[in-house]
Length: 540
Image (cartoon, rainbow, N blue to C red; front, side):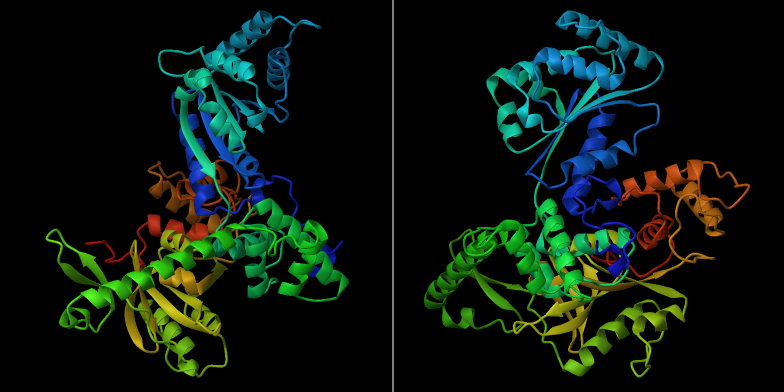
């Protein structure tokens, strides 16, 4: 209904498990990596669990797109079946014919075993995926284990992926299922999205649907996190209803009020507020208790530590610890930098970012920093994201931060270690704790990257572009393959497959679309000289 109004090519917040819309948070990358590892191992079972709506099925469908075309795949959505019904369904999904009206378990298993041997003889792989596997009975799970008994000297002939809610893990821990549990070669539990991830998640879905501008305000993203608890399916439902409200009210952006109204309509009165304990509320409660504990501890140590020790360090925040001789000692942690004059904070951050790239920045120019970068051969990449996203992109970035009063300002992130980071503001350069950045940052960043020759924007499969030849050459080098020149400039066939493999290896969504993130990772893998966050950031 609202697609034309906002300029969407399709609905951005459908709850259908479309792999194109999969936002690869840190957890989703790890989940996909576990599935890939499990399928490439010699075991029989791979386990992926998570709460309802966290994206288990979508991750699995993303995996399916990476399987070789000659892979035989069976997908079971409704596992509330008897042993006989399950075996019949497996036969149906694999296209195995069986006698009409058959109820013999032996007949089913013999036919399935014969099919698996034929698949193996043809150099193929057979994969059985069962969704909502927490509904499987013990008898059915045991029968699945027996199906994996067929094996060669090197690996199982059938690999089974179990997708289920958290109670599936408890079920598999029962003594009666210990033999099956021992055959699980990879297992992962998918949790909710973090606060920083939600802004990136919403932006990603809007972008896939064809919208490149910011549609949800920062306050609406914060409210989404509180109301949804970071569950993607609930985020989709709330965003869809909020967009409908914006359309009905002829508004161009979604604010906090529209999200709250959407929650009342979808969840009912009182949901998402004091009556609903979300992960955010829980985390804040824990943080308050932790801070109280720190204050009480500090008061105790201040009272008991000799005066000259307690006041001797003026460069950082003092923390009292006790050494092996039970004597108090002092350690300093990085202090959050002073912000500096409001009219200079943006200038200082972008000036530092441009300096690292060896280009000039003129704060007096009427055009934006990104337009200035374009005039000097670079492009901007903006996003919401997380520090882990920036760690993977490995490029300095300007972060939009918030002070204790909610005012926004900017700092250049020029180095990133495991627990500390380097920020540059109008007051200078300072090393700060990563946790302090996360407490003041909603994920908005701007970084610069160098485009390849003939770059004209995202390259989609099936399109012709001179960039194709450059991608083909660079990928061959990075992937260690013999270089084979292309006859034309169409982006198709094996080159698309190789791009997907590269994306998967770098933790990107393997959609085959060559956009800024794929090109940034390709530049890094190819060793192209650029400023990096990781330079000189090894922990001592």
